[in-house]
Image 1: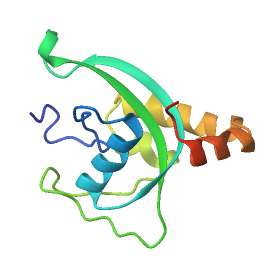
Image 2: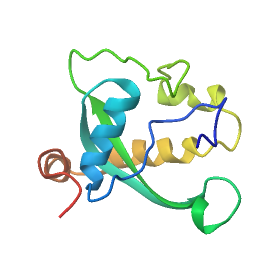
Image 3: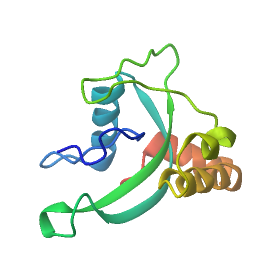
Length: 130
């Protein structure tokens, strides 16, 4: 059920039954990009509809800042055609105006500078879930 075909997106996915958020994050990135990641910190939660507003299209999204583990090579899955690394300060010129990812990256850049080292270490070692 690919709602955003033909556009740029980040790895996304749904929880499998009984799966935790952190496990789903690692699984989805591995499935879509073929790499392992380090969760850095949560960025945001969002409520949206993938398609027309209806119960079956209603989703809650959790957005995380992650880094790719060393010595990993991105290999896109069949869900994607291509990948491209775009520096944060070039993103506005790359994406269409109003793209949902622009405020996400702005918040991630703010949090990256605002979160203390202790908080960042906690997220890296303990994850997001209690």
